[in-house]
Amino acid sequence: MGKTIAVINQKGGVGKTTTAVNVGTYLAEIGRTVLVVDFDPQGNATSGLGLDKNDLGTSAYEVLLDPAILVDAIHETRTPNLFLLPANSSLAAAEVELVNSPMREFRLKQSLQLAHYDYIIIDCPPALGLLTINTLAAANYAIIPVQAEYYALEGLGQLLSVIQRVRETVNPDLELLGIILTMYDKRISLADQVMTELKKHFKDKLFQTVIPRNVRLAEAPGFGLSIFDHDKWSKGARAYKQLAKEIESYVRKTD
Image 1 (cartoon, one colour):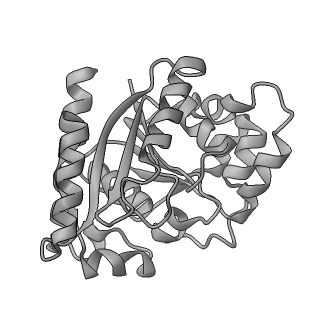
Image 2 (image 1 turned 30 degrees about the vertical axis):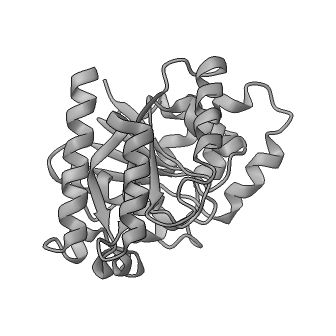
């Protein structure tokens, strides 16, 4: 049975989209069927996988309003086995339109019941509103990317509290798969301090893989490419390859 993973942090610019796109791409390259769900109105996963977010037709917005049309909204990508449910700024309107709807927290889950993939990876918006609650209600696991910077731990407690509340109310099967340290630069002492704090507080919930600050990794979305298509020999590609292996190893153990 397929697994759904929400990549989540209410802070922007921490590597959510980069993680969703590149983990999804590597899993597809080793033969898993993968659906990346862009659930961020900024549509960065959409453009990062080579689609024009301003010319989508059916997108995540329409699917959220009518779960039955999921199949019509899914796009193939340049990577075999990797598919995309795209999004753009219209998705932001869904929070307002669904606010009084019954079962509004489960709209995405209803849609994804029609999706049959080994992995569904959801790129969450940088906020803790209805869209994010929909992703957590639909997910088996949550992954939290945390940037190696001064404010890295700020808000992490709030996010963990939200995950716990979702477990207690709408999705008792939701599990924190782990926290991934991103944009790590070993030359900066602060980065090591952040890592030390994460190890102290989260122990076995901190991924062993660390994502480095890497120019090639930052360039790739501008070309609509994953890091594996942009520069598969880069430090960023090697790190995401290792992270994807670590994720799959854990998921297989708990399956």
